[in-house]
Length: 149
DNA sequence: CCCTGATTCGC
DNA sequence: GCGAATCAGG
Image 1 (spheres, protein in one colour):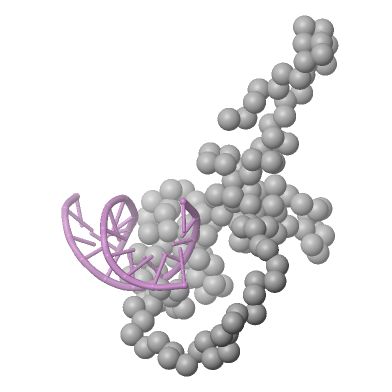
Image 2: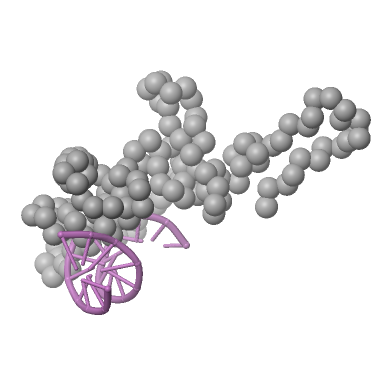
């Protein structure tokens, strides 16, 4: 795939919009990797914006002023949880929560099972197979959905 | 382990 | 020019 004007345009657009390279890559689809995006972005004038990884030689010595005994975490936090569409990653659970269009519509966001779009919980929910409507006498008394491995 | 962008270098 | 591999940091 070559960098057509359209693609370059979209790249510039999304990049300016602040999306990460990997997100842009997925957006462009067609086997475009984040490396390709970064490479191109870097190559054409617009490169390096807020890079989370700065070779950083100038650190701020002043910072942790307070702290000391640490205010304590207060609340426990689990990974994932409530991600908007734009924040979804390939390895995040894409189980929708709420109705699309609602102000609080979001996605599960917990780590998804490798190869699946959802986390373990939601895989179980999603891949729960329906027994044949007729003739399920053979399975009477049994719940034999194919287990998700 | 998940992610981020930066650089290198063979094609 | 391109991007996978690699690097380097959060």
